[in-house]
Amino acid sequence: MNARKDNKRSSEGGQKPARRRREQSTPGTYAVGFARPPAGHRFKPGQSGNPEGRPKGSKNEATIVSEILGKKIKIREDGKIRRITVLEAMFRRFAEKSVAGDIKSATFLLNRFNSVISAVNSGGLDHDDQALLQEFVRELESEIIAKKKLP
Image 1 (cartoon, one colour):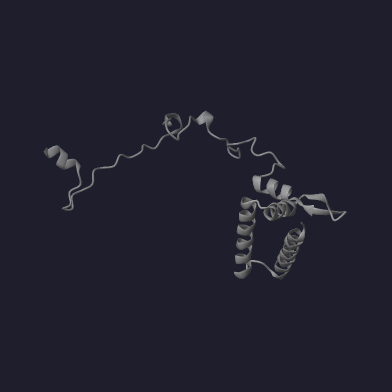
Image 2 (image 1 turned 45 degrees about the vertical axis):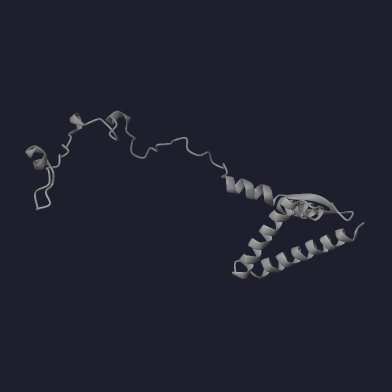
């Protein structure tokens, strides 16, 4: 029981147990172990741990998605061919499905609209972006009204 007391720190200002010192190794007596590879297997100065690395020109996910959504495609609208981005085409399709009665598309589109409006109100969009958004909303509203008038 006394041996246990001697090893523990006492709250009465007793001394800490002595720490084990690492021995300074000379080149011939290098200690091999965890996080200490043998001298022949260490990285050479100027050598990377991943020499192949990421190939040049490879793209991350954000770049790939932005390129796909920003790609221009041709659509026929009112007998005319227009070029719009994939993202705009997707939103137009959501709008068409919403008008046709698809609740999921309507919910998605309205949620996106609310998030964009909140960004506008918080000053997140500049004047040009606000004008573009308002134009899109006007077009969307006119499409909805036109489709409601059809029998």
